[in-house]
Image (cartoon, rainbow, N blue to C red):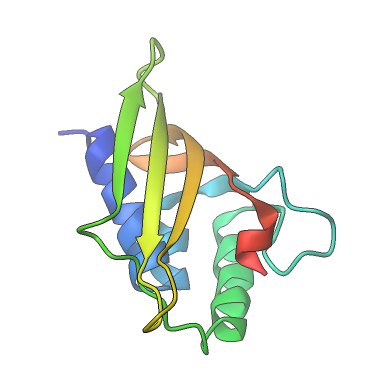
Length: 137
């Protein structure tokens, strides 16, 4: 039975945002999958475009290693998302509002983004991730 958009999305989020497991993120993509962050400027710390499972794995492992000191984890009770299906059964859109708890007196940090997923055989064939580039530095 094919995976639902919800299952594909939750698997991807758990592998990336929750556990920062580059191997698991890469395995959620097709062998020729594409991960794009079109709003990222050239030379940014987060890759703008990755093609293929191996490149996704390698680049995200390096990115997660650079971010190791950032121990922020999304507050799941304050965060949320809405999935939108489309007329194309292989495409769905995620609207995401992620909240990170503030440190002591600091306010919570809210991050809003949109992701467009194109899937093939229960894996992500293309993911376009739209977020404010300053959030990934």
